[in-house]
Image 1 (cartoon, rainbow, N blue to C red):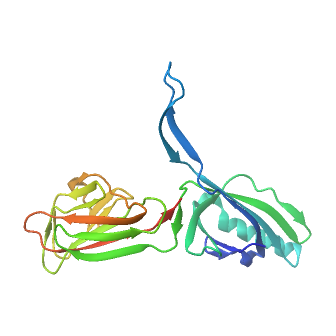
Image 2 (image 1 turned 30 degrees about the horizontal axis):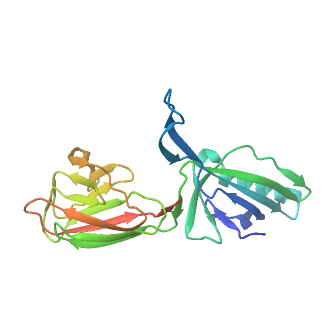
Image 3 (image 1 turned 90 degrees about the vertical axis):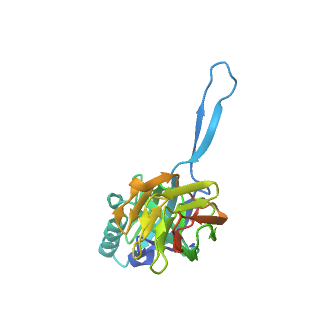
Length: 251
């Protein structure tokens, strides 16, 4: 047997279930964005993108009686029911990583009197594996200051940038640059307010109120490794407290 797993918050052992084998794609399936140009050999290759990822778990269910076996199978089916959407899967030998999975394909089950075995095929529409815990970095910054943010993942990821004035100040027309990409918001953040810029979900709100009307620029991402965030603000701005929150993800 290989190490077990937790799926949708439930240990496999809760169902008398044991993981005998697992197959996980080393990298997600890819798709090539290309075009054929008549009269030119080969193709014009624009880029390669990640598509979905697939996992296969070989599971064995063991019980003291046939009725107990059937009860465990039905309980497990409810936990992995694909109509509820994507659910978290965590393997025991990598407890700091989360796979977001959904059952796909039919489940052909082999029965013995008190044993059932099948391969559970799972897909990941979002092909990335995520850190189990988010990362958060906070710093009080004057306009022009820099913040170091380390992304421990192996893929770029979006982030939530929260900006609020320090003490009784005000922040006017803030902007944040990561790498060569800048996001700018036109407006004022008063004391007690917080501007949230979500570069993963492409939204901006001011203390919960939609503030997309003030947005210009683009949506910075955190590259794998060390990143430098630069904060700027308009004339008359006070210092601001910036918090950068994100969940590292892995190819």
